[in-house]
Image (spheres, rainbow, N blue to C red):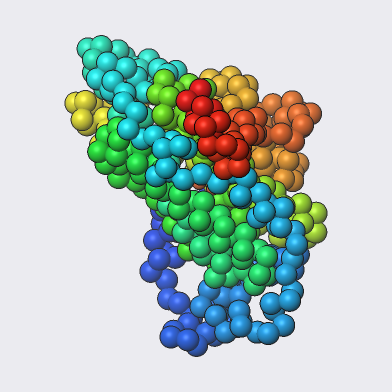
Length: 413
Ligand SMILES: [Fe+2]
Ligand SMILES: [Fe+2]
């Protein structure tokens, strides 16, 4: 059993980019319609504690047509499947959101300067005011492009769950999520197009992490990685943008996306409730290690200056210079201070893992470097953004079920 010491550098165990490449090019034990189930399963450690999450290899379509399977449908997801009608929205219908709303990119920052830590560094303070606005808006472009790539990852991941989950109810949930992620790809794609023309390329870290999750065959990797961590991160980022963006169109978009994401996060929570209490020590360690290494990748690399090197180059700055100034400016103590804010995205992630039972005494010291674990433990189960999502659903009900005039009125508020 691996113990976690307080120094994050000792903890570092995975390079997701390498893992992502390996899964893409690794040999596959099936070809055509023939699947060597033994080989597939021997390479993959599935941890199935509840029948609703039983799996088949991704190429084993024959298993889907076994006649006894159809009647073995879990009802665990029925509520969140039915709720989808309440929070339906359509990104190409201006009754829900209108992407023609203008914004003065040249003179106004889309996000509050608090969300752009570089603006406090000496190399950025030397820039003319207009360049600072342009940098803040290019940073917003980078955020929104990362979200768009993340939404594409969520779409492919939920579609991949349909291929491996055996239970028809779990499949229906996953297909429903895939449909909602597809509308997020449309919506965030339209937002980026409206403000900047096209998105920025994905950073290596995010690309590696998303690839690893999409290609993984283990349900626990997909659900812990995507439904708990990336969806939790999305809820935190959307809540932060909802509260800090100066572009009303982005505020609206984040709220609409949150009406869906809150349910995706619930799917992860149902899995955790039905799985975590039944794990043996070895399985628990495996899941905790996976979760902690995903967290660490997100924490240290997603906002790492190296991931934004093309952006800095556009302002005549070298990413290594930015990194050096950032290392001087941001200490562990600063990160800990920032995490006291309930909407801090990484605090949301730690709370998600803690409430799901994926942090134990063994891994607690690692997270405690950044977060007051006792304080988190005493908080209720509500997640940041739940209130924003609920208000969004009330608005959607007026459009979906109320008279259309009332809906248009609410949309304009
Ligand atoms: Fe999404
Ligand atoms: Fe999602």
